[in-house]
Length: 260
Image 1: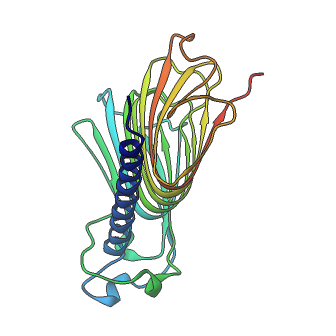
Image 2: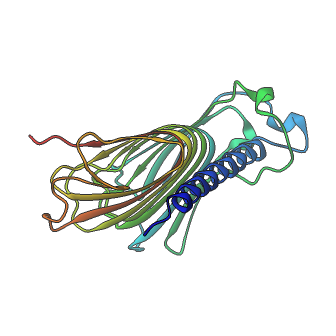
């Protein structure tokens, strides 16, 4: 026979652990953003002239590729449709935030330079940092996205993804995974204090396993069984999206694509 007092204690312990993990994640986000916008000299990190730059990476012979995007703070847009491996536009007004793009041995990295020291966000509250990235639809890629704070619009439907790992600290994000997928896909979301909307396909099987701290999960079109959510095509279609969602504080909206 189960012990109700033990079960209550176990529930409270899990809740406390979840809160502690969320607090640690938020602390790490704050430190990440502070370090990103930091400098040993205050003159290095002040808001300056607004700049817009474009960069691209040729396809080359590397298939598949690994793509890693790291944005500490700002606005991020990712979509397909590029003729090259990467076609990108960057807009920023802090010289220290000039992005770095590197493609070596089948790995494409888009990230901030290493900025050291300390400076508060309040001192540079008017900064702008906007990345618009377009990727090639036909190249198989394992995509990793890490963002500290800000907004992101990830239009990933149509990309030939072999894996997807998304880490979001604080802010608002939309992730579009609708459409037809040719192969199974493992997806991981790890969010802190984020409001995230994930758009899911209706004709491809979807299984979402949720580990939620203090987040609200909205999934009106999915069937819930404990902490697992599935769509009507799960177990029926030949292809399955396996999604592991670890949420801290915020709101998770899981929307299923409506049929024609």
